[in-house]
Length: 75
Image (tube, rainbow, N blue to C red; front, side, top):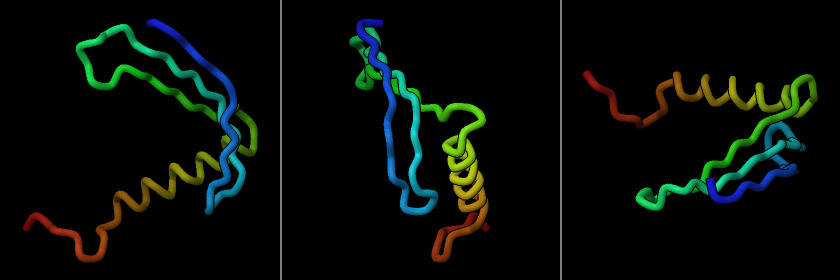
């Protein structure tokens, strides 16, 4: 790992509102790969921000399991 940065990102999501996430960003030393950065975002446990991330996660999982109108099917 070459360098590491950390901090807090504050986002305004159009559905769940304000979310504050802790982040860590690391530049990986492997120069043979196109993607050399690793970014991790987490909501602090027990906060309203964690609850909002859970809402988004469940919403995304529901959307992924529901066939989309006009989507191709494997019959």
